[in-house]
Every structure is written in C-alpha cells, then in structure tokens.
Image (cartoon, rainbow, N blue to C red; front, side, top):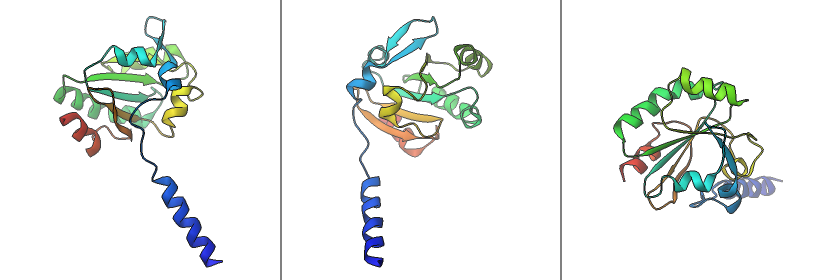
Length: 162
C-alpha cells in the first residue's frame, strides 16, 4: 500500500508542475467583454489596442477585499512603470457595481466587465481560482506571468523590468 501512496504523490506532484501557457487559446481570445460604454469587445481586440506594449492584466472585483487592499500596490506599479498598459477585468456581480467600484477606488486604466463571470472561455483558460489575479503580457504578445495574486510579486516586477 505504501508503494501506491508514493506513486500517487509523485504523480500529483508531476501533474501540478504543468508549465504556464505562453499564448492565449483561440476561445479565450474570442471571448467577449463589455466596455465602460456598454459595447462588446473581444479579448483579442483588447490586447490589440496595446500591441507593442507590456500589459498588466488585473482580474478583480469591487466586492473583493484582497483586491481593494492590493490597489495601493497596483497604483505604485503604475507610478513606477508608466509605459505599461493596465487592463482591469472585472468579476463584479453587475455593471453598476463595477462602475461604482472604479470610481470609488479611483482605478486608472482600461476597464472591461466579464459579463459571464467565471463561466466563460477566458475564465476557463485562466482557471481563475482567486482574485486579485495578475498576468503580464510582454511587448510581443507572450504571456510571461500567468498566475500571481500580489501586485508586488517578484515575478511580476521582473517581467516589467524587461
């Protein structure tokens, strides 16, 4: 029986070391978000608007206390790395709450609402298990940071320095 437990532990460890993706799936790229003006936009078009720039993606919600507590660190990033595009994807429970949260917390950047929340191709691709969730896309469009939950995470900072 110990042999089986040992093999199971090794297998779980091996499977959990899956490498983070370097590019978005076609389904994630074609997923749609809502703009502040109420228009629909694909994730691919969101990325294309910042082509040639490093992009920080912040998946957040105004009801999320960890997201709100992390905002000063996001603002510090924005002050230090001004040439980076900041894209905020909201998991708020409604568009009104999303828009109020942006104003209340003075969130500066490009804003999009995930109208289907975690039930959409983008959320499936990113496997959102916790927010805030930060990602970094480099200047050539590769995902260089896939899953960090702190805006001052070393991996995130190193990606912005490049």
